[in-house]
Image 1 (cartoon, helix red, strand yellow):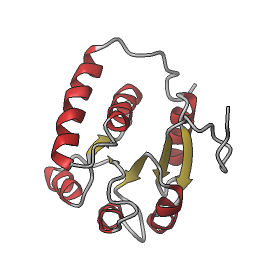
Image 2 (image 1 turned 120 degrees about the horizontal axis):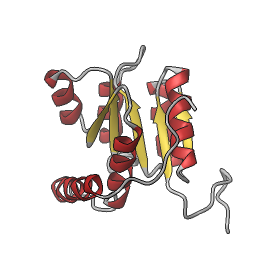
Image 3 (image 1 turned 90 degrees about the horizontal axis):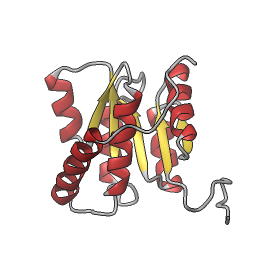
Length: 165
């Protein structure tokens, strides 16, 4: 199989995981890599802003609560750049306040995943988002995404290792 410059096979989908907590970053990386994704990590919002235009990931998993540059600011910056404006963004949050979710969605996030992470739910959302990432019209992409999440949620889940094994 042909390789890209990062060593990933060309048919692998690339995910950029952005989280300032090393344990969460490694957990997300391990789960996604075990499912065949090529995973890159950023330990800060600024790293994500620097990496995303060069890497051009198929999806970004973005923690909302980071120190220097939070997920809302990163989301806005990614959406403001022509090179990254259409990359799907799944926000990871420990807070389920409606205000924070609304703020993340209006800043450009496509969906959110709550902590503690439900691995099966996360994988459904990641796969659904990747399936429709080529649709650049946000309303059409969201409609297809919601439809796909609903369908995938009803299907039997693929086997995964529980967190902590």
